[in-house]
Amino acid sequence: MIDSSQISLRLDKVSKKFNYRKIFENVSFELHAGGSIAITGKNGSGKSTLVKIISGLLAKTSGNITLNINGDNVKPEAMYKQIGFVSPYLNLYDEFTGYENLRICSEIRGISPDGINEVLKRVGLYERRNDLLKIYSSGMKQRLKLAFGILHRPDLLILDEPTSNLDTEGVGIVDSIAEEYKKDRMLIIATNDEHERDLCSKSYNIDRSKP
Image (cartoon, rainbow, N blue to C red; front, side, top):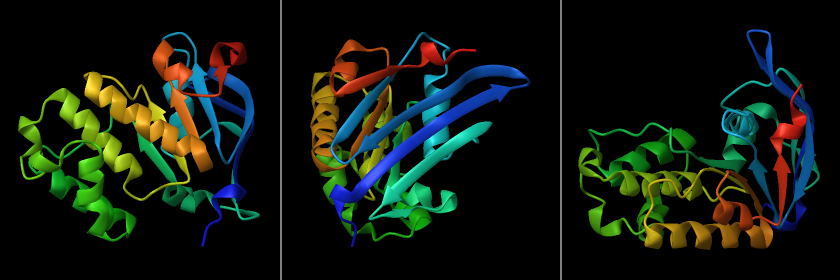
């Protein structure tokens, strides 16, 4: 059983380059249980690239990322089990319902589907759970992506521009989820939005890590 008070994330001189062009270099910071950080910077500065690297969707060029739970470092290939990632550019399956999308997610992650309805209620989509995704609005799709991120109750939640396409009620849902993760787990938000930035206790401007 994971003790939520014994979780930490450390980035040590993480760098990334594409085709010999350096996006950022030597990004270093630490997070512990109850910690939250906003990754800020100009458009195109590499915010999304950095959170993709932390979540395991992209490979870093150099540096180290360490996720530690109960005194043990999580193996890189297993980190996805402890991380929830939410982004506007995540792909969903339009030909399936909202419920079916989450069921597929639970099968991929190897977790029980028992919590799907609870998560759908949390993001305000329970009444639309049997509707095909292709008739969802952009805001409803963003809410479903939030559901994806928290379905497996990760120790680290990473949100990339989480309030994109959301109405006031949807923004409130993001706020509630963020406050929950700030209590005893870890939260990272990549954003230029002042409200999203203020959800975190500290910030890291990635522009200062430019070559």
